[in-house]
Amino acid sequence: MAVTETDHIQEDLMSRLDSAVSEVFEMMLDRNCTPLTTEVDINEWITARIRFSGAITGECLVYASQTVAQVAAEALLGTISDPSDPMVDDAVGELCNMIAGGWKSKLDPNAAVSLISVPAITRDPVLAPHSGITYNRCYAFQGNVFGVSLAF
Amino acid sequence: MRALIIDDSAVMRKVIERALRQAGLELLEVVQASNGEEALQALRADQGVASPIALIMSDINMPVMDGLQFLETRRDEKLAPGVPVVMITTEGSEPFVLRAIAAGAQGYICKPFTADQVKARVLPLLNAA
Image (cartoon, rainbow over all chains, first blue to last red; front, side):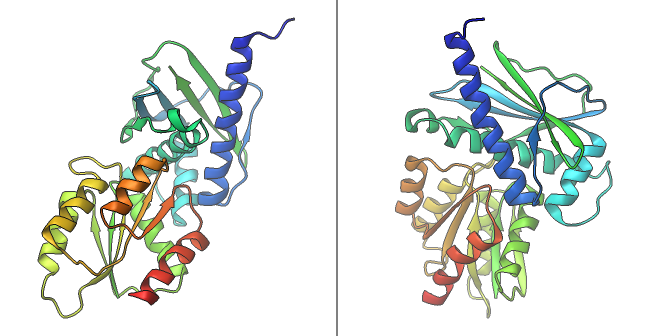
């Protein structure tokens, strides 16, 4: 099957995303985080959304189950938390912020001057990207699975 | 010493505080602000106290008042003029860095960061202050 220009663009976008996610988890959580080849159903979502504006228009979503979000929050904070603790939502928002910012910083300088919003966090069961073309990928750290979407 | 940490995320304020302690700073008090406006109020209230804030760590992307507006207002009001300010933010592109430096930031750390990076940026500024 021929490789199209669209395939190259998607591969490039996702490669930069993999790198950004890996950096965030290694530097801030001291955990290895790797991309999965298949999508995984994630229930009881906590979703954080960052919007891009300017040279790039779109959004980055990070979504995780409450349990995985709790594990990530504990790794980030170094303390035990409860799944209902607002700090868990805050932690998912910050992960989204750093992943979106890290991904943006890996673009060419003109695109990297795009603005990013503060994160919006929700526990709604379904939160789909608002934008048109969406790229999804699931990641795992220590067996804990979460998802990231880029939409433009 | 007393430090002012400005970030709209309470999680990130805790992470930054932990990194400062890991860098060896003896923090007697950490004043927290969730946006630039709260930080300005904290600095105004801090004028004339016996042990004033000696370090400011600030995010850029925040609601109400962002970190760059905070820097520019602080400069214009001459609040804590000799206190080192380190920006700690996901906004790493050149226009943001240049504007922050022009408004008085002496250090710039991009998120994600390590405790070692915080130590390397902050300690020289405190030793020079």
